[in-house]
Image (tube, rainbow, N blue to C red; front, side):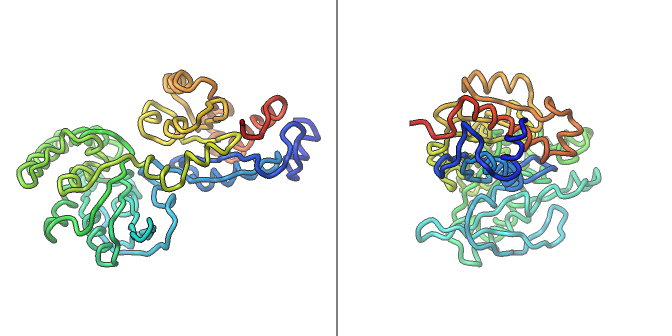
Length: 367
């Protein structure tokens, strides 16, 4: 970096070639780097660099339905009480988001029955989704018209049975519910994610049995075969249990993209910067990076910065969106530095990209 460029980056002076009039927008739209930084933190770090190069950053925190989902919605935040996976009472945040005259309660499974500790073998197997049902009942008592539930990041693998029983006790869904899932997995595939929640491999047979029993119960009592529903396996099967009671299943990313007007913002931007902790095959199947790539009309305006990147997924993304630029921080600075010095690594590669574009690519939005 030349002295002039270094000073510009530090002081906010426009770099030649990139310039600085307002309207040269850079959309910064990250998912979280799990366990390292939130989407908002990543966005703020990159926005500081973007301003230093004379462009106008617009930061949007994205989610695919898992952690960080609720924060993508604007509204008053309240707290309601419900049980955690092991029966302890906790206060759960809910965002009251208005859509016209309708007041929607936005919540996530991660914040009520989430993986906030390493459970013992026994705890992992008995983790219950009952708190989700209690949360829906509590929200209806607070006057919401409907509930939007981000289904990801749960500690449970009970097929949603605890949630189902809590709701059956009160006659079913108290308000219309939309479940925004971060995976398209069918119901019985919830078994495949159980090990991520601490379930011992020796207990997977028990998890499989419980899922099959829950499927039969939902079909018998509600007339819905959750095994044939895409996304029903999300959040350890909570999505399927709610679908059996009449909830609608949808894409978490699509809900966030709609609420944040992502497509319109991307259309106005000269450059879109996105990323997530790890780019893998799931990134292109309903998650943030693949979703952002689909709404950017010119892939050469898209920069993807990830903590690490699976080679096959990277090739697939580049084949689907010719011109996209993908940077893996682990490849650039090594795995240890990518985690320990994430902010420095991220801001350095974004600054390098803005330099590269400033030397031959206008920062102004294409006409």
